Length: 147
Image 1: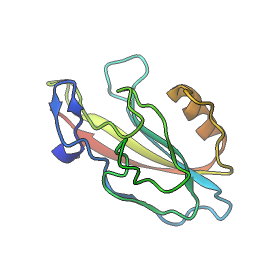
Image 2: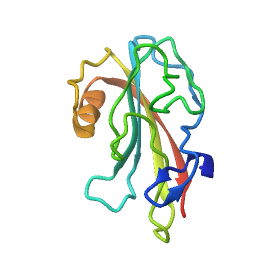
Image 3: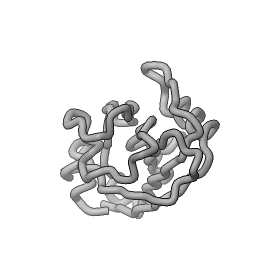
């Protein structure tokens, strides 16, 4: 990833823009998508959730750069952003500790058999559980970043 996708805060000075993403060949019975982005290398007991978006319409196959901005509302209608581990409802860029080495940011898109009804204020763990319980298929793109 580039500095464009680095968080702006916590000692990081990036632009904090979500990357442009596109996909194709979803299963025919897909009713919605969910996008889950986390850093499994984060120095925590539970990794670090950077972005979770659920209920992306099945007719969508692309998210523009910066679609995850918490205030720009560039996501497709019906999409819901979950509060990430920075405490923001939206994309939070890479910000590994300096000298911690390369971190692996996994962008996983799930094809869902049904749109999700997630309670307001649900934890990232609950959202992840519901996404995986309703997934038909998934694909992962891994991006690397270090400071």
